[in-house]
Image (cartoon, rainbow, N blue to C red; front, side):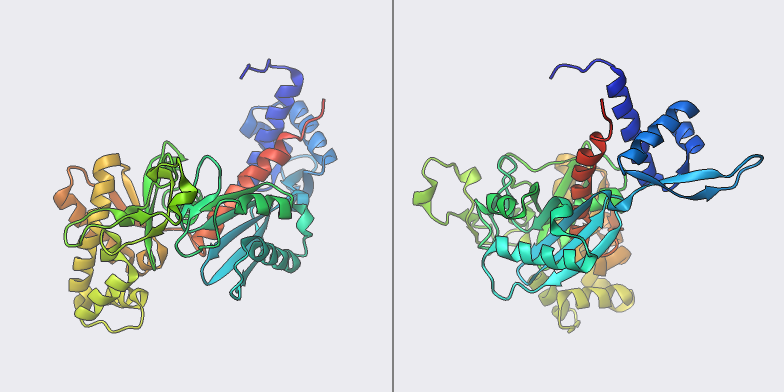
Length: 408
């Protein structure tokens, strides 16, 4: 791509974008503060703010008292200049959120799909409900990012397979774009949790880290050089298939319809998983609950059992030790191959185990790995998948809205 010369228009675009990003990140600022942070002169900063006010992107929201002279006007990004939607789609419901361009979540709703097997209709209904709650017209949304379990092909953006969501398959993305009439991205849910962790959690600003998702099932997301590593076919992170001691070998994935996959290699033809063995059979919710019951914890769910043990380490230490050893097989494998430096425990089970479980995992990994990563508990509040979806959608919308802020 040819380099653009440093024309006055390009410089204005760069300055405008820098100021908008600054206002989004640091809140209301005066003209002088904007100039100080960006290195712009007072005259240039004034011209910049006038342009952005004319475009409806910034507004005066108050005053700041100074020394001598009149108070300085405080400028902020206009929240309603753009909106985005993020969704977490699961087998039991769809959670949709709407955020304004500043990142403030203005509505969040959860919709029961009621057995509906049409992904386009399900998403449309959830987004429409979230928009009604936010009092924002659906047509005003600039971007949509949807998180789903399963494998998303990084080349086409379509879901290749999702065991929990069989109706999500190739062609759904095109249907969503046609229905919503806006840019739509489908992303693996654990990848979105990692995006949220880097933006708001314990991995904030980290270039390299791995996120271990421990929930009803389990998954992994890897961030390398500040970018998600998806793999050639989108299968990076399907760590449940990892062969580990103490479990039979996984049988892998089988094709749904071999005839329909003529000419397609096994690496890109995903089918129904058969996880009778492998790492997932040791650390999935069913296995964790069985282990907890063997240690005398009879709470109804695996999450409840882990939480009870973490709150009473004297009673639950043995259970947590054995669970940490199981989890350490996967963490060690990731650490030896990628050396991410930081491994984040997320998902309901990861949260429930908290620091008592994280400390035990770190100790177990240090015994069998040449390097010792930091093992931390997620710092993202609320629904991590939804927050990651909204964050990704905001980045897309800001690129669209902010980059077009200068005129010729």
